[in-house]
Length: 254
Ligand SMILES: Nc1ncnc2c1ncn2[C@@H]1O[C@H](COP(=O)(O)OP(=O)(O)O)[C@@H](O)[C@H]1O
Ligand SMILES: [Mg+2]
Image 1 (cartoon, protein in one colour):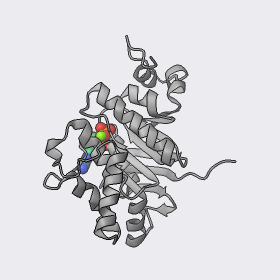
Image 2 (cartoon, rainbow, N blue to C red):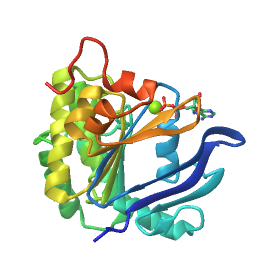
Image 3 (cartoon, rainbow, N blue to C red):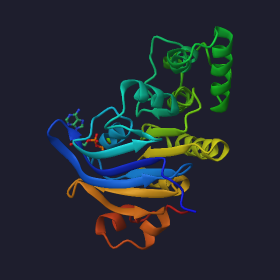
C-alpha cells in the first residue's frame, strides 16, 4: 500500500520577494522517512527548508505539511502545526542568556500550560534522550559544539514532533562528533519513527543517515537527481551528481 506523504511540495518556486532561488520543485516525504537535501553552497537548501517550515511564503506552488497547507492555513492552524514540527538550526540557535534547561523548556512553555514540575521533568527527559543528563543549569557558552547541537535537538524535540528539520547539523563539528550526531539522528528516527528532513553537504552523513536524497542545483534552480545514496553514487549520469557522490581519493562507503 502506498503511504500518504507527510510532506508534499508541489511546483514550488522558492525565494525572497521577487528573487527566485528555486523553480518548479516537487517532491514528497513519507512518514518516518529520512530525506536529505543536498547540493553546493548557495543552491537554495536553507531557502527550501525555510519554505517547508512556513518561514517564507511560496512565490508559486503549494506546500503541505502534516495535513496543513502552508499557503492557505490560518494563523491558529499554523501555530498548531508548530507543535508537531521541530527545527534544529545551523548554529543551534540557543539563547545565550538562558540555561540549557530554560532553552529546552521554551517550546513547552509556549505551547502548553503544564505545571512547572511537569515542564522540569520533560526537560530532564529530553536532555537525557540526547545524552545531556544533568546539564540543565549550564549556559550554552559552557557547552562544546557537539553538546550545543544536542541541546538544540532536545529543544527541537521538546513537544515530541512528528517531523524534525535540520539545517546542516554537522556544520562546525569534528568528524567524530558529527558521526555521533548522525547516530543520534538515526536512533531517534528508529525509536520514535520521527520523519527527518536534513539539509547537508557532508557525504559521510548522507551515506550513514539518508534513506533518500534530493540534489539541488544552482544553475538549473531545481532538483537534478533523487534516489538512495547508493543509486546516486553508482547510477547517475549527471556529471555534478557523479562527482559529488564519487569524490576523488575517497571511498565514502567504508
Ligand atoms: N534573506 C535573503 N534575502 C535574499 N536572498 C537570500 C537571503 N538568504 C539567502 N539568499 C540567497 O539565496 C541563495 C540560496 O541561499 P541558501 O538557501 O542559504 O543556500 P544554501 O543553504 O544551499 O547554501 C543565495 O544566493 C543567497 O545569497
Ligand atoms: Mg544553508
